[in-house]
Amino acid sequence: MENMKDNDEGVRRSTALDEDQEMVDPEDLGSTITKEKVAAAKKYIENHYKFQRRHVEERKKRRDQLEKKLATSDVPEEEQLNQLKELERNETKYIRLKRHRMNVDDFELLTVIGRGAFGEVRLCRGKVSGTIYAMKKLKKSEMLSRGQVEHVRAERNLLAEVASPCVVKLYYSFQDDDYLYLVMEYLPGGDLMTLLIREETLTETVARFYIAQSILAIESIHALNYIHRDIKPDNLLLDVNGHMKLSDFGLCKPLDCSNLLPINENDPINDEDLKESMNIDGCFPNSTANGSVWKSPQEQLQHWQMNRRTLAYSTVGTPDYIAPEVLMKKGYGKECDWWSLGAIMYEMLVGYPPFYADDPITTCRKIVHWRNYLKFPEDARLSPEARDLICRLLCDVKHRFGARGGHQLKAHPWFKDIVWEKLYEMDAAFKPKINGELDTQNFMRFDE
Image (cartoon, rainbow, N blue to C red; front, side):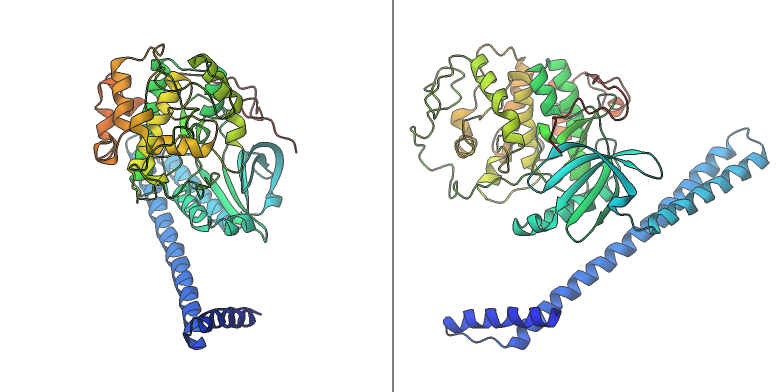
């Protein structure tokens, strides 16, 4: 069957080339397909042994740590031996669990807490351990049709590699014929989007705490040479104590910008297309695309909040936090994540993103022409330091803070009172209300 598929593919390609009066040897096509399969097998084997080596190193490290701890304690020798034997039993049990091929039947499926273009996120309970997890279920055919396979693989690899309190932890990953499953820690505090909808705006003290934790999270993935590309409030989750963790690496709803391109900074702006501009300082017409009028920043805030969840759970998503270089497809690096953080900080303190419009295409155009549209409302009581930091994040790449590393942001005067090493040990700026391990009140309700 596989050979038949390969032959059919070869015939189709050969026919297409014949029409252009070019000839390709079918054996060359077969050779290309074989090389691709060999490369995939090589990558799989390399990853397998990489994880095996790392597991052995981690196991040795855990034993060394326990031995050092026992050597400096007053624990009797017999008790020391018992603790070392217990560690070995746990390590053996862990290896046995790793050999077990997990599948969806190992979990009791509970409430749906999220939906996106590729599938859903559901609360679940391990049938053996009783532990509560968040299970992300992704439809393979949808990922293939949208060309998102590499992004999925990148997320899975990143979650498996990163060991940081700032990033959501991955426990298991497995698949069946139709779906890919990622089983992760459940963070019952909900996401930053829900918090912002509930609170409208945050004080600078609360915003500073969460922007600081976001900096640590972004730094931790950049250190592994990953770019998130989709930093937004929906992907910043709160744990039971209110501390923030970053999630959704490359799996969020892809933005369809096909109607936007080509677009670049030198293109003239069509004022008719941008009538619904932000107007927060009265410099632009204050009417929206459908003729409605934002008479004040408060009315604009209400308009944003009314549409926020619809945008978040649509198949298109919202482009409000995407950097201009990403939209223009000019090539981009880690700097694009810092732009997104600047847009989030603006929303935290003002109430809506800096380039919000009625439709995503107009938002994209505003982002590309950010010099004309980045403004602060007169009634926004932002400190000079907060305004300065936002402007150093929402700017061109070569001048953007973070381009040379997160230390640029950490040294900014707005963070002068932050003790970075203690950020995840201190009390969080906001404590979510949670009633039990199965509580989902901080997430949107979805029909089954």
